[in-house]
Image (cartoon, rainbow over all chains, first blue to last red; front, side, top):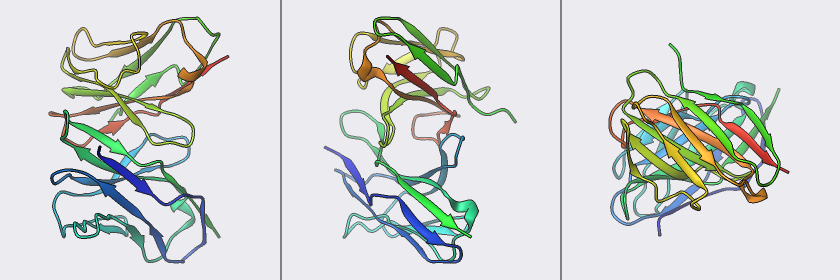
Length: 113
Length: 114
């Protein structure tokens, strides 16, 4: 079945460090891919998305490229801030057996000042 | 503007009790989703409404789980005879139109079954 695998956390970085959170997926067809972020005490919110191969989603300095050949959608940011501390979820829209959004397990990011 | 709200934010139930969790979606949003998020895991789909119609309930884990949205706005997720394995955060999300639109999530209700 369709699934999303992302790197385990927590990831701890110093401010201004480079961030990569790996995400790979298994899916039939051509799913849309998403990164959601959950800040402490808040609900999940969409960070960025890509709907077809080679698309790059970007928002708030984060970006991710839809790589069909490697079935990946890694999240990157060139210089993290303390305010980026949150849990990040990779997700896809699955159209197999009915439409649903499938989430990875989440990666917690801590950024130290 | 107001986002998706959920109540209560925390609920403690004794095993065997019934619980009801409420979701107020963004006004005018047609689609509404319920998810279950176990500790350390991502959300898992439970059920989907388009207006008042429950179009997909394939994710409900047992017949103890029941959801309704009688007037196409507020939704209630009811769990009967709660079990310890029901302990989780229950998330509600709404989208403006169809189920492929951007989903806006509420803060969740954390259910603990003792």
